[in-house]
Image (tube, rainbow, N blue to C red; front, top):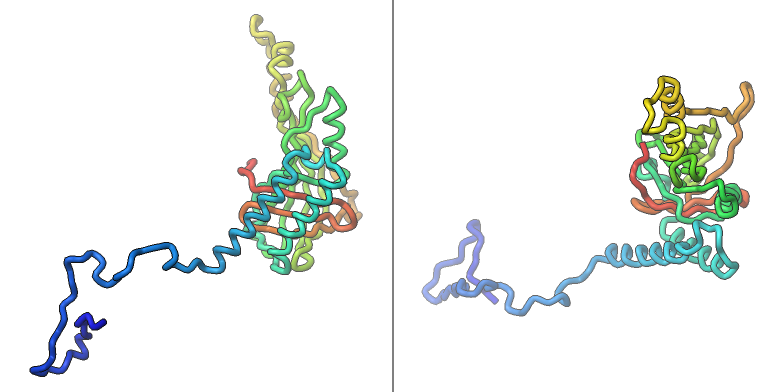
Amino acid sequence: MDLGFHSPLHPPSLSSTTITRRPNFNSRLFILNRPFTLRNLSLPSALAYDSELESKKHLLLTSVQDTQRGLLTTPDQRSSIEEALVNVEGRNMGQPINLAKLDGTWRLQYTSAPDVLILLQAAATLPFFQVGQIFQKFECRDQSNGGVIRNVVRWSIPNLLEEEEGATLLVSAKFNVVSVRNIYLQFQEITVQDINISEELQALLAPAILPRSFLSLQILQFLRTFKAQIPVRDPGRESVGGLYYLSYLDDNMLLGRAVGGGGVFVFTRAQSLY
């Protein structure tokens, strides 16, 4: 349809037989002569890809949510979880590790790692031990080939420390990127810190009805600032290490596998701890 619009660089030729049709400005959509529908839009393929990926991630998180982070699973559940893991891992396979995206705090949602399941089992069976949230904290934003990883375990002793977050266990390691998806961990030290005693213990050490003595205040301050560090490596010897395969990474999910049968890990992004 000729709307009578012409470029100022190419004006129409003047002729006595030329008739110029003017656009109908009374209509708000004088160019579109058909109603607007979603069928007129074609969604980009990337949007469909993301939708499918998010669906697979949701299925994975749904499959692990009733397992108490991996402690209570049946063979059928483990099989379903492994299948869901592989489906997500396949969407990210072969891409190099993005250290800027890896940087930050990740909350554990599920694992089959024996060393973690032992802690969860102890908390489930021992009345004097509790395990709260478990995190992995990566510090590598401005690095090009590695950084620091801290495994953070919140734990407690009922009636003595605050529930589930009475103290913090830190296992720190340096890591180097050794291939497209593998990092090598060199463990450095184990730290116990952030002691938060319960109100019952505070009342026992320094009762509110009595004036708090200098000694009782010193004891409270010591417990709150207590920090014990245990080196993992011996001087002159190579530190204990292990290979960790980061099988999937995006803005809100991290999947990993400890090479050598050490188990799988499912993490989601969490707020910064420090």
